[in-house]
Amino acid sequence: MIHDELTLIGAQAIVDAFDIPGTVASCAPFGYGHINDTFAVTMQVDSETERYILQRINERVFCDVNGMMENIIRVTDHLRAKLRDRPGSDPARETMTIMPTHDGNWVYRDASEDAWRMYLFINGAITYEIIESHHQAGEATKAFGVFQELLSDLPAPRLHDTIPDFHNTPKRFEHLVAAATNDSLNRAATCREDIDFALGLEGITATVTDGMRAGQIPERVTHNDTKINNVMFDNKTDCGICVIDLDTVMPGSVLYDFGDQIRTTIGDFQENERDLRKVSAGLDRYESMVAGYMGVARNFLVPREVDLLTDSGILITYEIGMRFLTDHIEGDTYFRIHRPGENLDRARTQFALVRDLRSKSDALKAIVERHRDA
Ligand code: ADP
Ligand code: GN1
Ligand code: MG
Image 1 (cartoon, rainbow, N blue to C red):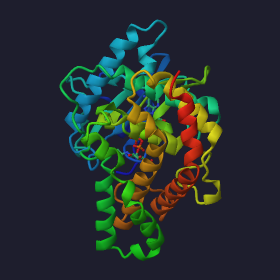
Image 2: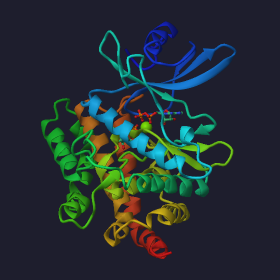
Image 3: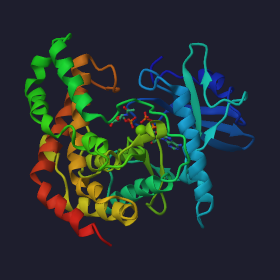
Image 4: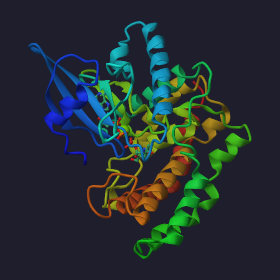
């Protein structure tokens, strides 16, 4: 079944498994995620309506659904308990709420064995593919900073690694080399310059992994997929209210989290932008991002993490560029595409941003220095 093909009848059959009231009034594809199939479901309950998010979990990407859901339950329970103690917070809007099935599970398996889950819809809030102001940039980085801080005392045991080696940049590099060498679809010739660009940066791949191994960069509970459309903004206040898409919350480095925010927030262009002249990092935008993040994270970051904040943006943009390029060469089996060649376009956009960030690195690092101490 493809993403657009969930009929009302099909949706009702799935929704019936969940412990929520009413009948399905509408069900439509929702959002721009690359991995799961997401639908907004409106339930009619007497004369009222209530919305939910229904998702089919991509099990080619998330092989251990139970481990992933266990992580999400532990993380959202912890966030909810801490938010309840914060005056003025509304846990139902500031963290995800998972709806159980009638038989007490977090996932329903349909007749085809597809795995489905249901979240409460966060009303009165929006996600952006491209933000509209520096204010929103600071709000987004702050929201992820608060998320990291609230999870810093998550009790043991260690969370499951939902995707092992997710941010192991050297392994991502090796995967690209293998894909380009095998070249089973004969696509490498169409992107030789892009492959060469990626190969030329091998020297930076281990910046974070080596630092973690050496104990200079702490392992923390991190989100690992902090792109801008994974934070919701309140419609009225324009504040970042809820971090969503918790599938990759697991042990990691805050550097990859801040880096992916740089990648998706520092400019005014789409991830698949073909006009590479538009791919430019804004220094004022970065100032807002760093101010928003450091206002919270200054309390817990170690000096080495602050040193590497700007480099983390270069590193993860490079890493994700390699992942798009690898997927293009291997036949687009991982990231959802909407047109042939989209993964190659996405890779080229990432590499253009890597070039731009590297050329502005001194100015960007000076911004971090200005915000290092309160
Ligand atoms: P993916 O893993 O495919 O990226 P997400 O979980 O990020 O899927 O969901 C895709 C989009 O659906 C998000 O960018 C957001 O716009 C919307 N969304 C997800 N969860 C909710 C929610 N609980 N309330 C409102 N919108 C949501
Ligand atoms: C995927 O799920 P989504 O669309 O938020 C991917 C991220 C990439 C991102 C690139 C589990 O994120 O790692 O950075 O696409 N998620 C997974 O847009 O691979
Ligand atoms: Mg997402």
